[in-house]
Amino acid sequence: DAGVIQSPRHEVTEMGQEVTLRCKPISGHNSLFWYRQTMMRGLELLIYFNNNVPIDDSGMPEDRFSAKMPNASFSTLKIQPSEPRDSAVYFCASSPRIIYEQYFGPGTRLTVT
Amino acid sequence: AQSVAQPEDQVNVAEGNPLTVKCTYSVSGNPYLFWYVQYPNRGLQFLLKYITGDNLVKGSYGFEAEFNKSQTSFHLKKPSALVSDSALYFCAVRPTGANNLFFGTGTRLTVIP
Image (tube, rainbow over all chains, first blue to last red; front, side):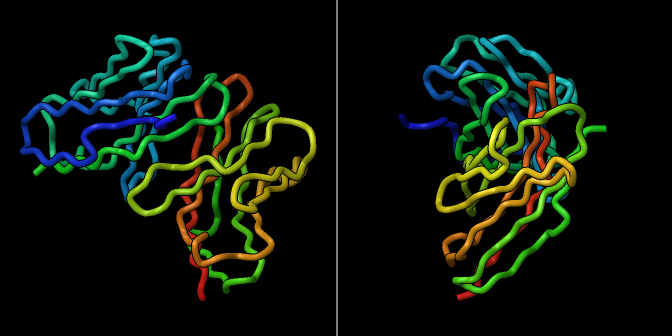
């Protein structure tokens, strides 16, 4: 299996622009998680899905952030409009069952200037 | 409040010596416990987990961890450190009834040749 796939790996954008991060979970996994990692705040859970349904989005920092999972093999995290404080590494992770270990993708390094 | 603590930001150990990375938790019930490793510019990689049963859990790359309920600890250990073990290590806990993981702040392990 190719593991969790994220794209792009790096994104540099200007403040105010829309950013879309993409994730393909491991086939057969029914839970998907989006995290953000920064030096200051460490690893933060943003939102997670079970069977394509959002379960908890309380970690989403603002209304500028939104996430979707239209099917079992694809999820997006969108930031609109982006701000410099959104600069971070964003990870997607999937799990065969929501209570089991999670498998992380390589991350997307986002820089907002 | 649910939490997990990694009291050491940095651990240095000489190659060939045993290593320990500490983790304590404060959650209700009988939690699931996990260790992850993160190499530079990579996603988190699952190492091992404790759900139930034997308190000593063996995982990838020769790592093991011991669950101690009375001390609410789950320390990561390896009998003989390798330079290639140098990385950032995260402890995580899933409290009873919760779907998501709570991650510690990470411990940077440096193995000195």
